[in-house]
Length: 85
Image 1: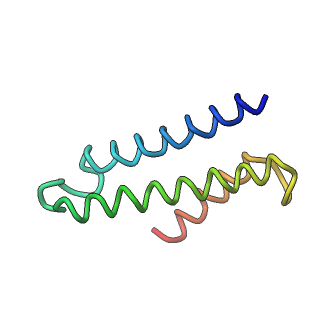
Image 2 (image 1 turned 90 degrees about the vertical axis):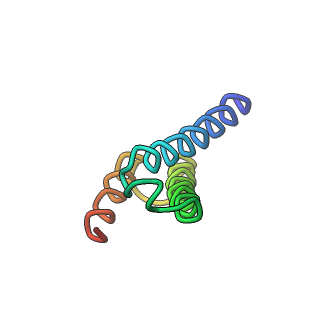
């Protein structure tokens, strides 16, 4: 059971990194040549850290801390994104 939980966390981290790289390379934040390598790395790092916050909050909810379920966490994340953007 602990091995499965660790593998699940590792897989979530790998997906977070892959998604961050895919967003930047696909041009979602502008052409990579226009952004430059420094800004591209900073955007990838920011997306990765935001994903890690969501993973950590989801883990806390699964352990019984807080109110609601993991689904409400993703709904709240989407609402916060819409407010900021």
